[in-house]
Image 1 (cartoon, one colour):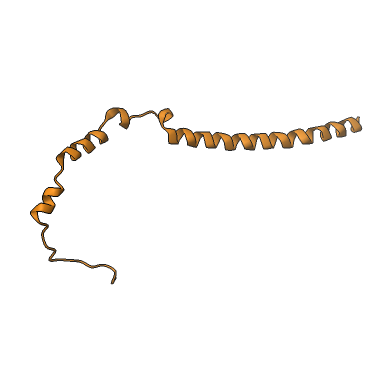
Image 2 (tube, rainbow, N blue to C red):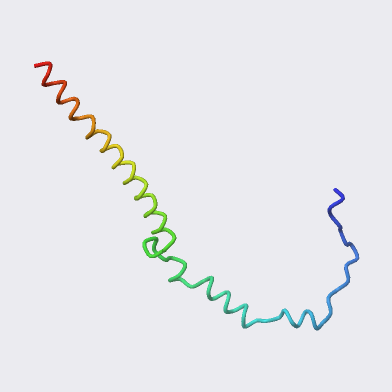
Length: 87
């Protein structure tokens, strides 16, 4: 517990430092950006990250599907030959 230093008698900031952080125009701008309805309810199909994620998932499933179909197609001629020999 030696990593923490607690200052109980911390000095108050100066008036200049307080005034430098009182930027109400930026506060209103940030508030309006957060509460913008159109950006808040943006559909998933318009989100580039979501579309990229779906595209990656589709590519993975397509690769798996193709690899399984190639495995099935290589086995099918052998099965056909075995069935013809049994007749």
